[in-house]
Amino acid sequence: MTFAVVVFPGSNCDHDAYHAAKHVLGEDARFVWHKETSLGDADVVILPGGFSHGDYLRTGAIARFSPVMAAVQAFADRGGPVLGICNGFQVLLECGLLPGAMLRNRDVRFHCEMVGVRVERADTPFTRLARAGQVLRIPIAHGEGNYFAPPETLADLEANGRVIFRYADAAGETTDAANPNGSLHNIAGICNAGRNVVGLMPHPERACERALGSDDGLVLFRSVVEALAGHGAAQAVTR
Amino acid sequence: MKARVFVTLKPSVFDPQGHTIGEALQSLGYDTVADVRQGKYFELDLRTTSAADAEALARDVASRVLANPVIESFRVELLDQAPAAAAPGGGR
Image 1 (cartoon, each protein chain N blue to C red):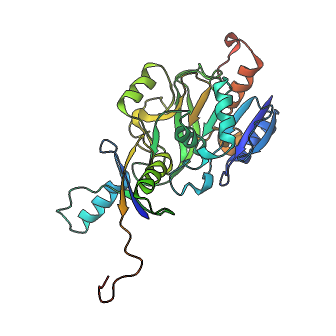
Image 2 (image 1 turned 30 degrees about the vertical axis):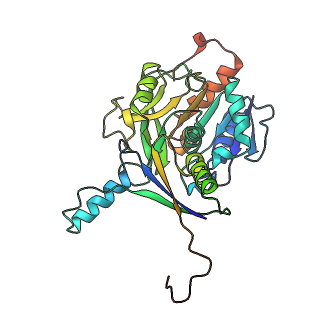
Image 3 (image 1 turned 120 degrees about the vertical axis):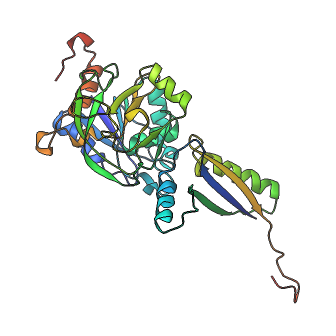
């Protein structure tokens, strides 16, 4: 199974994602430079965190014009699993693969900390080994993760179970205090209508080994490996 | 030809930066400042002398790149170019 990690100028979590796939999971992984027009034989695409093209205008605003994004769009349209992490999520929002937009964090500060992330749905390729209601300990590191969507979009996301992750306390309560950035409905991650494209602000790739303080993020990577291996949902295990 | 593009958050969208600046102004004693909304301002220098072309180009750039239509709206203004050589004694 091959993970393609897209590299934009300014990506800085590309190696973390590569490491999680290649060294922690033992799967094939390779980098795909943003000027490439093909993803090759990729089975999974990861848009990593960082500051693509410097994010000088808006986060992800320029990255969506990168040549590789047409291939990512086509891959997603074919049902291929795509995971956007942090800046990768922002790129997915800018290019329209996911709805909504990011505002500056409500306190205008960059947040770099461990947070609680409640899994809302296990019916995506990236959460099938997780359990709905499970709270993951995963770090965030962003200044613009304040998720916004117009009321009708938000209602559509909620009605169709497309909110995949919410900020929550250790008990799983989605309190305002557990919301680090002001995101509407404590939203930390969403998916597309086909459920194969998932974006989230927290960094699961930075929480894949106990030495890093948490390996809760591993479930996203293990899930997609399992999903692609074609294992039945009945074999899904909870951690 | 020059065009000005003003990008502002839609009224329904909370503006954390503007809000913070507003609070700062109030703490400086500007009690009359009720609220602040922050936006972006771009000046485009366009290689065209056609006002219609300039406006179309500025709108295209603004809608595709400079503004995110989910959260922002924009306004375009064309700047009248001053005559290449000002009349003597005509001032600026």
